Image (cartoon, rainbow, N blue to C red; front, side, top):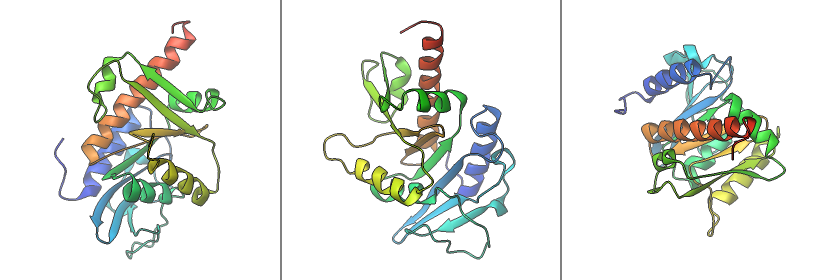
Length: 210
């Protein structure tokens, strides 16, 4: 899809689509787009809004500390710092967070393992840099916590890991999926691909498949 001039319009359409798919129900989820890099500025969904009915007035602009820098008077998402570190250290131009059924279930059931591993599916090629269905995608799981500052530091350290940095997305246990991309179009593609793969894994296990 083409990037809109106003990033809020793209996020409004994203919220409508994700709500329709059952990935962003009630007031769950949060989305952001990087507006500028020097200094870092993100346009982010405000806290507590229904993502299927977003309006232009329900967004805030934050800086590289997660502080609101506009006059909206709105509160940003409690998970703002995760968006900041993904933009700062993960190269994200857009960050999307969903609460799908299978993302939530697998994030809890596989927490003792620490990841969901997927291989052998053509859909893997929708992920940036992946060129074969033989690729093994490891979607790491972080324990849920209300200490978002500590979690954001842990995520940032994994983004900067010189051996196996986080790529494409990760799960928070009992919470859902974070995925990102160089722009909103790529972030949406990553969400769609990973959500599909999580559902394939979940349904496959429920039906006794591998």
